[in-house]
Amino acid sequence: MTLVSDVRLRRVLDSRGNPTVEADVLTESGGFGRAAAPSGASTGEYEAVELPPGEAIANAREDAFPRLVGQVYAGNQREVDAALHAADGTDDFSGIGANSAVAISMAAAKAGADVLGAPLFQHLGGAFRGENFPIPLGNVVGGGEHAADATHIQEFLAAPVGAPNVADAVFANAAVHEAVADLLDERGVACGKGDEGAWAPSIDDAEAFEVVEEATALVEDEVGFEVGFGLDVAAAELYDADDEVYRYGDDERTTAEQIDYIAGLVDEYDLVYVEDPLDEDDYESYATLTDRVGHRTLVCGDDLFVTNTERLSTGIELGAGNSILIKPNQIGTLTDAFDAVELAVKNGYDPVISHRSGETEDTTIAHLAVATDAPFIKTGAVGGERTAKLNELIRIADDAL
Ligand SMILES: O=C(O)[C@@H](CO)OP(=O)(O)O
Ligand SMILES: [Mg+2]
Image (cartoon, rainbow, N blue to C red; front, side):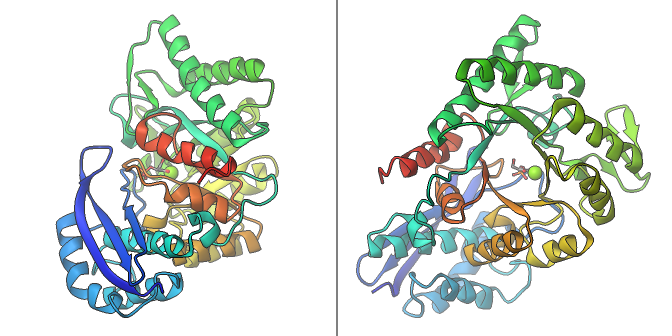
């Protein structure tokens, strides 16, 4: 029934205005799935390779289509993804491009779900589990690679950990985003937005902490449940490997100072989440930091693990981190992303399903978060390509698909 009868690829726009790959997968019985690849700006060194979309499309047409059309069943995700790997022939998807691979992989999943008449999250293995839902981490202030002349820390993330349901959590993050704007306005700070819709003011990190702490406290009072916050430091972007220091503009910190700095922030602001606090090659320092603060906060590896089970295995062995960011396009297929989630959960690491800074209206990650029973999803707070996922979560919780 779900035998793939056609695959189509095209270039569409992403939220930064760049071209990205969109895939359609059709099945023999009339099933249809469509998905688009997102794209990172602060990409990890060990991510699967994103090719220029035109090249990714041409290569996938030539090498992957013959292994997919009339050959594999969209309902059998492992078979589809194995065919993509075989067509690619490399270990980093530099053959057909991780962008073509992930778009086809996700579109196939949707086509499979379509034939079965099931919502995607159910097809991917999870009925909405009990009362669980992923708590959205909402980017409210940021800079780094996502905005020029803003904070050094890439993302300040509202985390409504006490929310009674997903809709209240989503609205709380939007309220924090708005409160931040009001507070910046009171301080006379004008600002635009970064790639993910977070405010991108020209203030230093210390002032951003003040503002975000105040904004989350205001919203917490308003909504009556706990609203904390966390960070994506994206420290690999700050790290100068030649001088072995983290550079925050003119300030620099040695690795030992960076560990103290982050541990101090966790204490001072009761951070619930710290992503990429250290360089992507420094498992040992991750382990040291995890020892110090891992009992009270999530220490999440994004550039460190790149959704890769081998890198995660190294982290598990060394005790580096206690959480992994899951981005399907970092590794190229849904199967690989699921394997990373499974390995993480088995070893007590919390998976956090994530968007990229360059996004589309695609909602696959909302379904992935529910299907894997992930405790968190990071997918922005406002902006159409972000609200597409947040609103889909609300619909899933409301059984409205
Ligand atoms: O670093 C990150 O976690 C992501 C998403 O927020 O950014 P990018 O997609 O630019 O890698
Ligand atoms: Mg990150």
